[in-house]
Image (cartoon, rainbow, N blue to C red; front, side, top):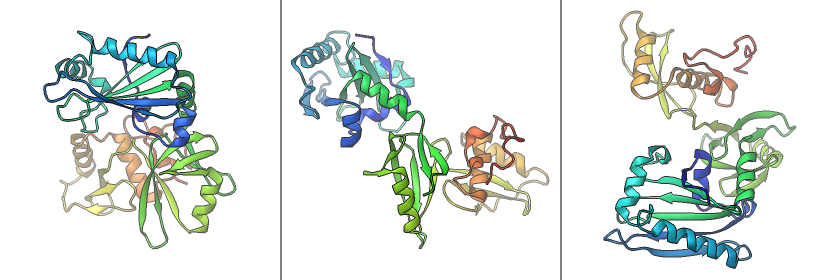
Length: 310
């Protein structure tokens, strides 16, 4: 087996329960859940099968050997203290979701073991999802192409990364946000519903719904300088226009003040430029994607992207 390594952001999604469709496509065998008890030295487990056909004696022997190795002295699951030390020493493995979750992966020739770790007492300290490696890796590789959203006549409107959200707004202004998962180039899960991408586009048009991306590369909100009114406004992801802050900048210093306030909140110039464009031109336009800007918030290849807001 290969050594433990931290999970990539894309792999982290596969340490939670997936839909039947994705679980089947990735050849999920099942998952183990465990906690280390009140003293941090126990190991209470429960196993949930997904595909009994793949839960072969050969797999079980390998998996039991793996868990035994991780539970042995010095292994990351030997006790809660050791697990906590591993997590502290591997901050790049953090899911950064305020749940104190970290991810790691171990591969054998045939199987991939994806671990979601939580070093906090009183929580389940381990979820280990077990896959046939080639099918899991193939699905992740394909999903890197992103999820296409199209018009009913197959023109691409926008593309989002696997696991990102969209917002569907009805004619009366009510909206719902849905997590989307890549199935293949022509199918997508929106929430828990499976669609052909053309079927989804036709349904949205029929119901007079609008659909926009809620890119994870954008912050929830940022500050913008409004030159026409010489004021600072707040733009929220997915919403048109801005909200006033009633902050009056010093003469000629509005742009710099907005940039400084964004910097304090971890918002980059590229993100701020994309947020401003989205609030004006619509969140499905290319200008609302920060990947189309350089680090200073200027459009990449502006001549090529002269119609970027359309």
